[in-house]
Amino acid sequence: MQTLKSAIEIAGKVSKGNTKMPGSTFALDAFECNVGSRLADVEGSVCFKCYARRIQKLRPSVNMGWGNNQSKTVATLALDPTLWQDAMVFQINRMGYAEHRWLDSGDVPNVQFLASVCEIARQTPNVQHWLPTREVKTLLAFIQQYGADHIPTNLNIRVSAPMVNDKPLSAFDNVPQVTTSTVHDKHNVPHGHTCPARTQGNACGDCRACWSSDVANVSYPIH
Image (cartoon, rainbow, N blue to C red; front, side, top):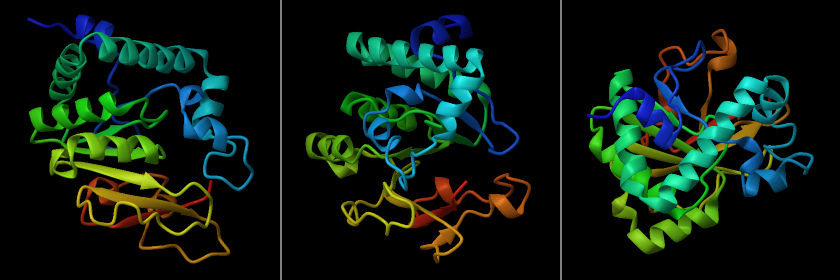
């Protein structure tokens, strides 16, 4: 029988919901992002002055935790994806939340990660999963290899536009479980649903738009 300690040792640690966001979360190292690491140096990009990197610099314990998640995830997926999947399913089920957010820090490291997240979502049918990403090429490679119908209905993959005030990306318009997100400043009109967190104590409250594939685009105010 798996224990929490062994699951964390295999896959990294799933965290409890915080004051802003409901449900459980899983973070990777923001300094290991592929696309994000390039965008972090581009003024006007959604990754410029990355909040997750700031947190890692300010809080050594967070930096260590997210770094451990990154190394364990990549290593276990390369060794045996089923091990990582089982450890994540165990932790998510143990939390008992109705929502799970993937990658509140970091981003998709490879195609196998996406395939395993799909399998985890299938094994946790009572949990709604949300995975935000900027790794467009990796997602396209995943769909080419596995097919769009491999994404379960309780997983919403939300692809972010790379620059502030960009329009939503259109590459996945025909994939029901892939939606989009954008970032807007105060001088521009947001696209689609505007994240209400700023007007309700910097918290999701009752809003679950990010998790819903029925919401085509969520636009976040720049922060």
